[in-house]
Length: 330
Length: 76
Image (cartoon, rainbow over all chains, first blue to last red; front, top):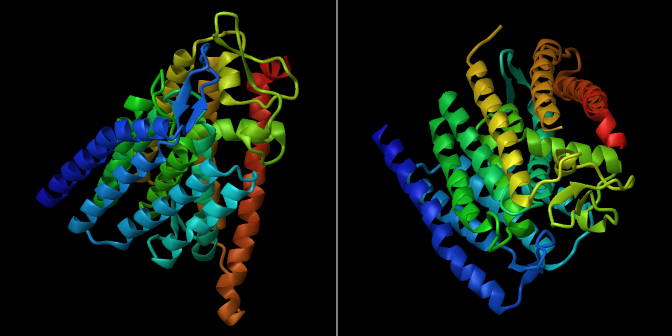
């Protein structure tokens, strides 16, 4: 147990401080190279450096490699490889605008190391009802899981601080759930996700000093999905992610096809005269979580982010309750 | 509206738990015999088809729930 505690503290500290220390340098570097994008929710049209993916992946890799020194397992190798590959996919999308299908397909390929390393258990565990053994079908779940979590986190990255703040909540909910089901090694391996997100949130929160970009959001999402698979908590992980899942579900059910946000002409949200956000009345605009939050009640960007965090906390609590329910069988 | 979103999340959670019960109770025990090495593949294909049907049913129920909870706002 002593080794677990020491490794948990070391990986958490490394994860947090690598991001906390490297992000200001990244911001300077991106500004110097003019790699900035307009923040459309600011009246003055502030230019914000992007992407923050490099500091996020640096924090994750440093902490996971440190953890590997304590627990040299295939699961940690799978987390490192899959998350790194997802980062590269995101970086490609940051540099060059790819089609709507690029990310789902590329992220499906990114999941292959989990299968090749055998870092999974093909039993799918459900709260209250126990496990179901689906050896072949589970392979399809692995291939689908990473694109779903990656794109789900990417799709919620719509306002200052939302992706990193939401990931902090979901990440720690996942860690607590893993501790509850007594999967201690993966619980410790999941700590860097929460701490990296928390450190990045410091720079990403309103008013953002940096945006994570696709490289950051896909890194978060892919690591989350990999942890869910190698930790055997797929359903609990999906529950903690429900607000983001709702966002994707509403978007897809209103658009009826996979489409990049930048390809949409009718925006779901508009600005009031005092630059608050309000839901559009445009019929062709997609329905999103933010649009629903704003129906009949214009809010500031910061207020919208706080509502999303409250929804994230509710989902996190439901995920933790579900983890407790894993130990109960009816 | 924000309250309705909270309700929607709890509804999704309950649907997930019920869906899990259906999967474990009906999908898990499916087993095919008499086809030698193909037994596992055939049973997996059957399980996959049933799982896809369950997911479609889940999405349809969610869409109905979405329309029920957000109907006025979405149409406006």
